[in-house]
Length: 199
Ligand code: VGL
Ligand code: ZN
Image 1 (cartoon, rainbow, N blue to C red):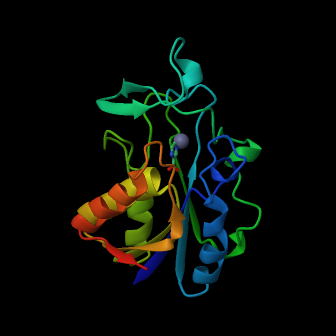
Image 2: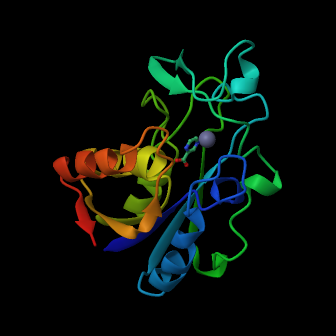
């Protein structure tokens, strides 16, 4: 059984948002069109407390784009984004939320980020996504959303590691590209891990 995963299609990741992904709004019509084809649609939401340690604002003297260590992982520092309950954390207004069956919140613990929809970046705590999919009888996931080089990438890699068949719709993802080529590198990494890239 296939599920469609909608990764972090939230206001703050759209152009003009706090962590706006270039052309990020292009994924919305693709997500809306795909949803009709799936019996199981699961959306993730980046959902940070206001003092989340992925925010540069929590590290005096550091700037957005600097890298620190959180848990055991290198952590890029971001602008404040997707704060729990804020407009920026809402689903994009144009997203057809009526077709979403399950919502998974991630990045909720101050001390560790969660790029993957399945686990925090230290792989210590599960978000419930794997359990939700297993309960629904899902063995294959198709992925669209934001951002290619962060949350799409780590969700796809964890899904492969958990044994799912994984496809990423290239037209339905967009990347941050802090460094030029990051998204292409992420797609190549996913493909090397057994993810099928659907053009
Ligand atoms: C994301 C950076 C920080 C994402 C979330 O959804 O890809 N990127 N938080
Ligand atoms: Zn985040």
